[in-house]
Image 1: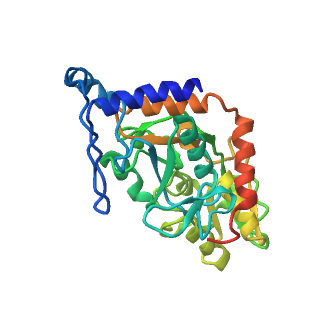
Image 2: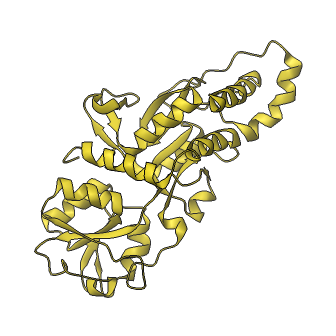
Amino acid sequence: MKLKNTLALSLAAVMAAGLTACGSGADTASAASPAADSTAAESTEAAADTTAAPDGDGDPTTLTVAMECAYAPYNWTQNDDANGAVEIRGSSDYAYGYDVMMAKKIGEALGQKVQIVKLDWDSLIPAVMSGDVDCVIAGQSITAERAAQVDFSDPYYYASIVTLTKKDSAYANAASVADLAGATATSQLGTIWYDTCLPQIENANILPAQETAPAMLVALNSGACDIVVTDHPTGQAALTAYPDLVMLDFGGGDGDFQVSDEDINIGISMKKGNTALKDAINEVLATMTTDDYNTMMDEAISVQPLSE
């Protein structure tokens, strides 16, 4: 309740400033009504730019959240509202998964309904920067490159790196990255799995990156590659969808892929300067523990579709 009251005051200040939303070509941005007290509006106008951004659809009662809707168990598309799935903007389909569960938790704390916007991976950051959406909750690593373009919340998940291969693969018993030498490998486009991890495999035959995580898994299951590198939740989900796969976890030591904390800390991104939303989200995350995150992820994995 304290959080909702605090956020209500922040949202009221934004509305009083008479800010307008910046929507996509498919949406019409609507201006907030002018404040009755124009002096108060003027006094808050400058502060509003650095405290809270308007909602992507112009509705202060709605939290607009972008994600791929194709990255189980973080997010996926389904054809009904089972398990509390949320309808995707401009579609008859619904989105669910860990990211949707987190979005709903944040929306409830802010007293806002959640609207899911389905975008491809490379469009997520631009959508935040343009103001089409309020935030991205999509399994994004908090990298320095991304942080130069958008602001991030505190981590809402910590994802270690794993390797997937087939049970009858020559690499099924690999105990370190060194044991993957010579493997034909791929991963998802625009991820640290592809850009940072795969080049660490000696003499690897690195195939072009796959557009989505499901496409990456299809490539492995079809025999187009020997291995794929991904994060632990995606690996866990893949084992449910593809029982012929095995997950290799090298334990994070010297024999594992060498990544930084920023590579495995997963955060929620929002427009630069939107400190009100950032602080509000961090206040929600501060009420949760690592065990809470893992329990929620396990629930997402248990209800994910067997294939995308």
